[in-house]
Image 1 (cartoon, rainbow, N blue to C red):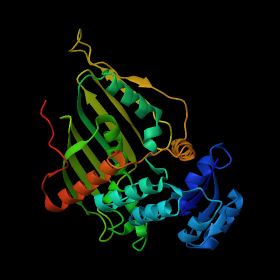
Image 2: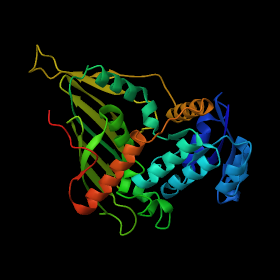
Image 3: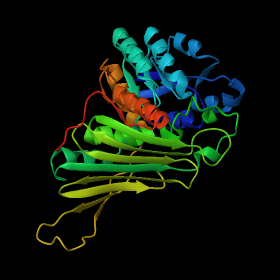
Image 4: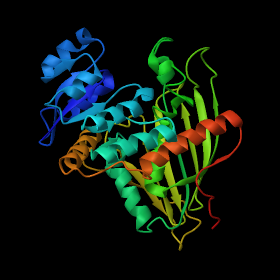
Length: 342
């Protein structure tokens, strides 16, 4: 059993605690840290958490094996380094860094300390995404040609002018840090590395806060193409479609924290002029938050690394950095190598 401390007891921090507390046999929360103790006392008492008024005190707690970060984005990288130096395993909400340099520093610190580090990309634990990956990897969809997605909603309207989530340094490129990085990580899971990005990002609705309309084109190292949009001043919606030479698969709805359904449609070589309706696939209910935390806890107990230098987590930060550069310059930004024509 891993004894964890939740760092940040806002809505999402509480959601992470709720997903496992009293339900898991591999991880439980025994402590929490928050700047305003009074606001969290009732919840902490209900969940059996000792409360600390600073991150440093949580790291010094001898009963804490691991910390789970549900804190502002700009704090993550330094907090990961501090956890590593304290010998604590660390799970960070995404994005765990906003620059490649800070990502590399955090990953090196965890490797040096021999602690397990994980990033909260809970979509990877969706049965539908795992099935799409199986279809891609086994060639059932044929050659991977194109991926597209959007993740939108009224996030811009939920926070006042002074809230940290409205600070442009916390949410560069609008909805990317809260929403779009999930699509990027799903793309990396399915299609591997991104070779180039061309992005645009604007603030069109409010006279303060984040950009509300952000979109980009991708080219993958495999030669596949991609498209992503995140609009945070509209109604809630999300969608991802993967197109291959033998067919396509699509997921999407309004809710994204429920277990997804999946639509699948194949090319019929014997009836190319027939418009076939897609199959609808459903999956057993799963809590992706519980799944990701238990995956982290098992790895921590085995002292097995998860997020490592050169992995998808680091490449995802490089993609985010490239999106910001492209949106600012209006030019295509290439990552580590050129895409291959196929």
